[in-house]
Figure 1: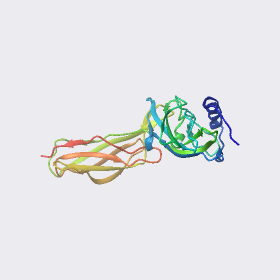
Figure 2 (figure 1 turned 45 degrees about the vertical axis):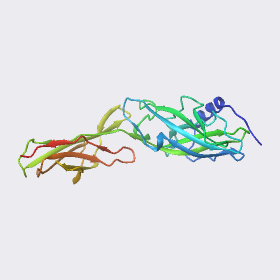
Figure 3 (figure 1 turned 90 degrees about the horizontal axis):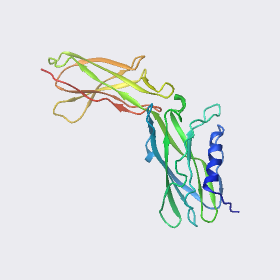
Figure 4 (figure 1 turned 180 degrees about the vertical axis):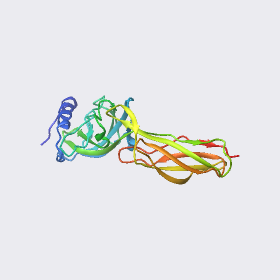
Length: 262
């Protein structure tokens, strides 16, 4: 049995249901032989949010059916994966329901939707950093339809910043220098950047005339996200700090600081 629906009507129902999704995943709803074969969020990259700037990204939905896919009916929404108590946060809905669709063949179509995530609206608090879920729908020309409650996963991360400063400069060869820095990340409750504590950060050095950085040691941030360590000034070159990132925070490398060794 075939069922028909409109994109506008489905959008309203989908948005409402996404707000009330329980902790346990729902089963997919479908009729006929239609399939959603691929969903790509933000080109496969994590969505990184700071404290003020709105992030624009895309969700590309590819669907196939022997009768072809009806343009304008691959409406996706994205929300934070339900928390242990069953609550879901941060519903994000496309600006244009229809999206921009390209027919790959007579049976397969990819529709790309543009969405915007506002750090002061969608995350709501820092607990939503990490994995988000995409729910999407597709409708075929013959009325076949499919709704996938967990069509894709995406990472939404708290933007990070890292600094480095080596001193004194200039310095005599083999004398001790101190390299300080600070690792901070976006706080979605205060809308400010705060220190990222107890995180391992690599101190790296690139000797003048060479092209690669070498790791000298690993330093751990203190209770305010600060870094401080000492090393020997063996040659002129650039020092930097490098953070590998976590499940909620992206990797970041500081701007290098040049030390002239006399």
